[in-house]
Image (tube, rainbow, N blue to C red):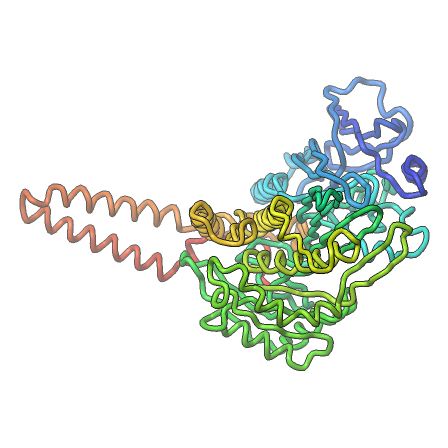
Amino acid sequence: MDGGSSSSSSSSSGGNFKLYEKLELQEFPDKFVVKSVEAPDQGFVIARRDGTIEPLDGDSSSASPSKTSTIYGVVGTIRLLAGNYLLVITSRIEVGNYLGFPVYRVTSMKFLSCNEVLKLSTAQEKKDEAYFMALLKTVQSTPGLYFSYETDLTLNFQRRRKLIEGWMAKPLWKQADPRFVWNKNLLDELIEFKLDGFIIPLLQGSFQTTQLKLKDLPVALTIFSRRCTRRLGTRMWRRGANLEGDVANFIETEQLAEFEGFKSSLLQIRGSIPLLWEQIVDLSYKPQLKIIDHEQTSNVVERHFHDLFQRYGETIAVDLTDKHGDEGELSKAFANETQNLPNVRYVPFDFHHICGNSNFENLKVLYEQLSELLENQGYFLVDAEGNILEDQKGIVRSNCIDCLDRTNVTQSYLAQKCLDAQLQRMGVLDSTESISVFDEEYQKFRTLWAEHGDEISLEYAGTYALKGDLVRYGKQTFGGMIRDGMSALSRYYLNNFQDGIRQDAADLISGHYTVRRDGSVRQMESFSYLPVASALLIGGLTLTSFTLQQAGRNAHQFMSSVLWAGMTAGLAAVVKANGRQFCSRPRLCRLV
């Protein structure tokens, strides 16, 4: 589809590649046809029987389609046991712009089934396919997916400015950093048929933007986070690192300030502690952390930080975990592994001990420790003529256990300190001023970071972030305590009873699990005893309550109450002792 590529490129200024923005989906009894509205001769056909793809060749059919609808992008295809499934964007919303290019968030997606050969499959294959299709429904509701038709969003501002000439004229999927392409595993067939004008690199993360007015001067502020797909998954089922050094919940966050042609960015990263460790759900509120003893541990940590050095420069590793209990053991092991690593500065900071639940300003203790290092790292700054005035020469890597709540509070604090320096350098603020003295604008900044934290948390934990009030208001409020309590309960429920399926969906869509027709799906078989145990517990409690009401009438009823109460307590003890067997577990992949 080289013709499609050149057509896409020529429709944008400066030689930059541009995707087809509005597409038409035509449904026929035997096929789906996807074509560009602006270039109707460009598109492709996918057979409903088995998902075979062919580029559009002139007039695709003399018959009229049974249904025609507008779609806003093709996410890709995935082959299961029977046929192919095409994922398309059915609605999207424009959320702002990044460096002048419109940015959209996906608001709904739909899988089109091309699996008519399923009726020829065995009973076991049909059963397995039904489970895979259930996972695809989970994938359809994936939150926080962003894209642009006109530019690749996976590269941060500083990296973009260092690209070789002509890079932006390449198809977007060739420009993209594969770490951050959420649908990378779904693009193979579209790439094979050279459908470049239809290949959208989707990014999962958060995009927040606002306009500040400081002393009547307009400043555009954007927070853009990019989630790495190498160890994609849910809060409890993806912890720590794999043997390659990739960590769970690794996110690159860019804060971009723009003023009168000047552009300045600050990068921070977060990611799970890069050791081999796990925290398997077992119905307890806080499952035990377990460090996995492995001969490759030191190599894993070294690989992780070497990769960071290659990409970002020297790393300040800020460890926000508790320094006692399970977290303390994990923190101690992390500190020991980083002692002799070059280009890494390990900084422990017991957030809960120093800041508690309400002392946001106590983060100044951490900032004072880091201030000289942060000044040396700097930030990226380009003037109105495009000249690079400053480079960011290193990175702060923050972590807690989840890399969500404490991490977001800390990153927002460091980002505010850097923003002050950036605004002073661009001439918006005087050398002694801070954004914090402008109440209304400071609240916009805080809200931006709080909403960013909520979105990142929804993607990993399934709930809003905790400690959001510390970011929004600098202190805990009563309403925030109630919200945190509800989010904590929701996390408990999701982690124990829903995240196994969410993890399977992530493994399937990211290619961590590959569907094969060789019997390898036998490991999918699993059984949850929770419904049976719940029914027995509820029944036991009901019978205990009923017999207690009758107990005053005779001794026999009283003994029945004691018996039922004892049986119920015994069952509860069995459930607690075997908690892992009652939780939702992933079926497709091993943990590491």
